[in-house]
View 1 (spheres, helix red, strand yellow):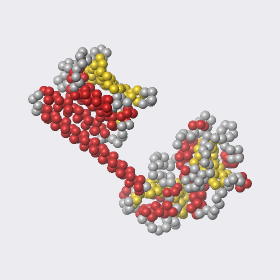
View 2: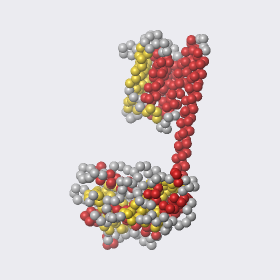
View 3: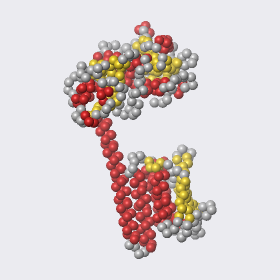
View 4: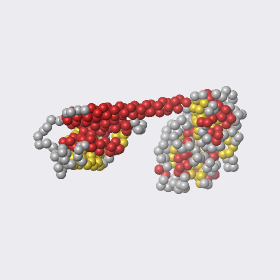
Length: 492
């Protein structure tokens, strides 16, 4: 979510780690809202004695009582006394029945977020009691779990900095399955979804009254593959996550130890069947590996074609035929170089500077085997879409070859390659490429384009949606400017 503490940075007196602690809370309090069957709001005191709402979360287990978003607004006058009381007492305070409105019976609790003896903020919990009915055992257990977690907030014991802070992909949620343990790791309660998750692993008995650690380890067929965090998770001793697999079922487990002022008195273990998620991830990994292998094989095949062309050119008696095969060989090698780069990663973009650094010098050397040609490159292409890389690499190859063979015909010289990026008025990126040489310059009379220049013009205008211009270089020689539109190629 957005950095919700930004509006209070001017007057908030946070100590080391205080802001991070509140962010951990907001990152994980959907769990508490689901267990409490209540909306939660986070209030921060303002310099004028009021409070401002920093965040709001709705429960996933019941309907919300607040349909409008009030984040950033000041606290209501009828709620402020309860929040003031909780802030001063540093204990959970509950509204009285006489405070209920005629429209809705709502239980409101104010929970101070206390850290290092200071009340940083206050959570208010709003639970609708208007649809009165006898709560089930599941609901009573969930509410008790929510109270235990909120009570830990008043002691600065939750959220815990040791809790998992990485990707939440596949992380268990309240509705996926909940198991409550006592201090010895014995199951006190297991929700229906929690029981179903363990049945899919192969356990057919009731979970309650049994050690979750013994149940879990008894279901594992290959214990050599067990994560070392598993014992600490299934006993509820550490606030970590782990994953187990048995009989083709993958189960993600997350433990939250429950503590008071003196000891750990139990734990919550959330469980989720992530078998389908892991199967899809394996399919993606397999697909990515297949794509890399295809690029690798295409590269190998193109290199084989280039080698065959090289062998054929050596047997040619005609210099013109030999030169034509060598040019074809260089073009095939350029395409092979692009596929080699694509085979080394999964990204949709290609580091074109690395690719060009290898290709630029090679193109000049192939075109000038009998004389010395210097190459100088400046500017950065950056990352370009993969479909953009092959035609642009071919264009650069043809222009460098043309500069060496015609611009620097039978003489030493230098070929420059310059890259830059500019933004148009519509914020689209426009890459500019310049290939220049200090050779003989453009011919005085128009000459018919050879195959190489025809390839360049077709690729620039059709494949890359850009424009190309030949003009004299200041100081002598020829300069070729190419303007491309990156979003055109990227959106093909």
